[in-house]
Image (cartoon, rainbow, N blue to C red; front, side, top):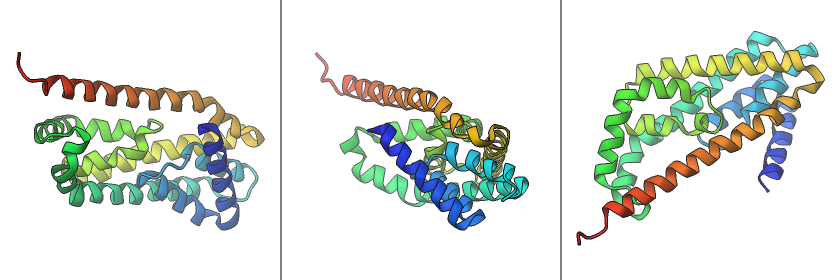
Length: 207
């Protein structure tokens, strides 16, 4: 099922870039970084393949991909900043998120947030959602923009370059990363399970 969805999204990526070129790269990277799953492991390598075919310019692809990623991340950041706390305070208890959890998360993110935003940009799955907690924790906007830009630039450059080098075999990049995507998704799921288990344990009435 998951593989079918990824294959469908890959076809959407290819068709969009084929149809509107640089504008498609910008739009798709914006969508991906704003929290909507869209495989940038396909967007940038396919764009790199088109560079190898002489249809696009390498640095234009990298800069446009980076800017799309940056703007989409800002949208997600603003959602977390403006609406995240209110939603969690109002509905968080239904998802086992308490005020204590929120305060702890904000304290942790303020301490390690710069590093996490930068590294998160370089990790499949995580990179799609890292901007929400940054906004929720009210991370310094200037730092957020700098670390997001740097991480997005490295990601865009690397995968566009791989697409150029792989040429007609660019799709092998996605296939190789597929297992890593699953590992990251499983780690996130495990973290959620452990969090829920810890939360329920602490809610047990004292004997």
